[in-house]
Image 1 (tube, helix red, strand yellow):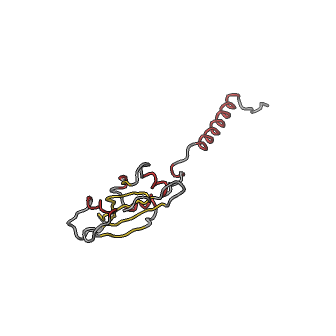
Image 2 (cartoon, rainbow, N blue to C red):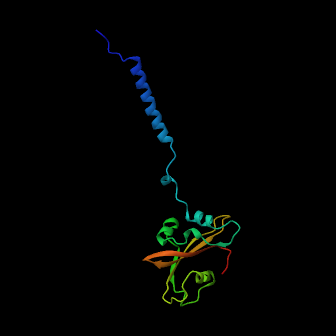
Image 3 (spheres, rainbow, N blue to C red):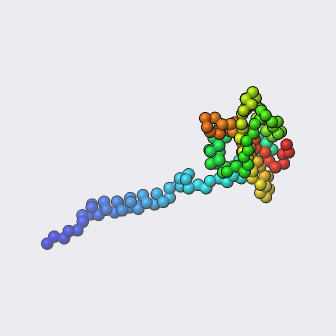
Length: 154
């Protein structure tokens, strides 16, 4: 009676397959995490990244032309929000640049002003970001922004 032992070649194939499968599993467990697993930046870290280190004020041009929903998704709910009629009332000093971005003849123009603030954190200064929006095609679209640190007085 002949024994049914595997041939040396078939044993080699089985060992190679087992080794390949175990290496593939290890590779998958060591593969880099996707961007979905990265922590979302905090509002404070985002605001600090927008203002140059040696500057007290600035504009966040990357948000210009973006929807309120997209900006809110990145920064969270605004700390303040109000509607302005810049052609009916005088703007405050920090809002004055809006005259460069709006139709001064449109007396019905409504602007939405939103702000996000982060308090002083140790040696990190407190910051405020204002973003102004105009309604276009039923969406609030940003037209201008201003970021400043807590030392700036208007």
